[in-house]
Amino acid sequence: IEQCITSIIKELKPIDELILINDGSRDNSLSLCEKYETANIKVINNSNHGVSYTRNVGINVSVKQYIMFVDADDYLLSGWREIIEKGILTERDVVCFSNSNNHTISKKELLDSIICYPQAYSIVKNASACWGKLFRREYLVSNDIFFVQELINGEDGIFSFMAVNRTDEYSLIASDDFYFYRTDNTSSATHSFNEKFFETNVRYSEIIKEQLQLSQLYTCDEIDKRINRIIIQGLFILTLRLSFLSDKDIRKKHYNLYRDNFYKVFFKNYKLFAIRGFRLNLNCLLIKYGCFECAIAMIKIQNRIKKILKSLR
Image (cartoon, rainbow, N blue to C red):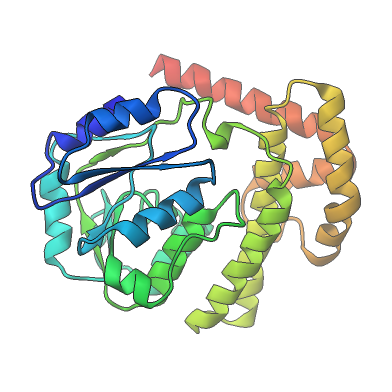
């Protein structure tokens, strides 16, 4: 958290505000935040409510024109203020920053990129994340665009999708990287398992379907294809999260729960191999035929290979 804060205040101007929200931490994070409290650096201390509630608090208490989110385990790179200032000058409702030089992408392509649909997946880097973007505060509040608190995964993707979907006043700015997203934090929520994961993934797909229909950019067939991929992607991520549980019996207990309550419905309504992505389809195929531990092993092997390649690089 201290690295995160210092990376921001190095280039923070008096006209900026920095809101540090402590969401019920059990370490010394609150005292570290309070050490930096000044006239334009505000510290808020809450009991633990989760990331969506916390970000919504930030939106509500902020008073400046634009909002940018920074997660506590990440930090900003040198030169971030100059890049952000270019975005502010556009006066758009949403500003996306990307190292892509493609400024001519359509709204539909940007929305597809946010939900990681294959045809648009690489158009905007980290498009689903709420960080790496600017949001005009008045636009968010007047359109009731907040984070969905019932979700424990995909909440930033829903937020980004709604923010872009409800306006034509958005910009895509090519820029150098200014946000360092830490991927090696094993205490992060993305490296843990929550029993409500699959339930919220189903809810995520329902909200995205509503938003796709609201956009009026997609045919019914196109919407079905995107929801199909979201569900299959969700099953893959569920397998990944379960792989973080070291106890095989506990993994089996959760697997049986999801199999009895969700898998039968899923395989009745969605099609395997109707989407791109051999790894995703293979994972679902293994789950469908009860080879759950094989699916876990496959993911562990893939992660191990990634770590080896990363260390070699």
